Length: 169
Image (cartoon, rainbow, N blue to C red; front, side):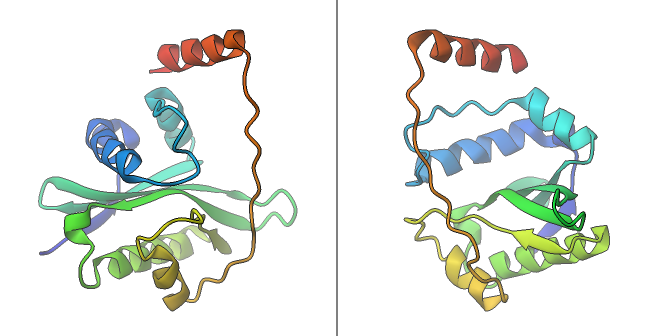
C-alpha cells in the first residue's frame, strides 16, 4: 500500500474529511462523548484560508484514508511558532506497519518547513489506539495535563449554539 501525504485545502476535500471524521467520532471513547458532532465547514475553511488551520491528508490513490489537522500560530508568550494538533486520524485498515509513523514523520517535516518551534499533541486519557506509544517513540513527552469542567447550558443557550452551528454550515 503506497500512501501519499499532502497538504490540501479544506474546500477541496471537506466531504471526504467529514466522512472520516464521523467514523472517528463514532469510534472514540474520549471525554467529548456527550457532545454533538457539529463541525463547521465555514469555520474550518476560514481558518484554513487564513493559514491558521492546516490540513494534511493521507491518500491511497484518490481515496482519503487519514487526515491531520493542525493550528499553526506564534505563541502569545514567546512569539515562537507552535503547531497544536486538532485531530489526527488514520482509518483502522491503514494502521498496520509503519503507516502512522510515516504520516507523523511527514507532519514533522512540514512543521520544520513552516518554521515551527514546538508541536503539541493531545491524547484522551482513555485512548487505546497506540498513539501515546508512537509519540513516545518519536521523542514526544507529556508536558501538560488538562482539566475540564462541563458547564451545563440553559435551554436558551443550547438553542443559540445549535442555531449558530446550523447557520455556519
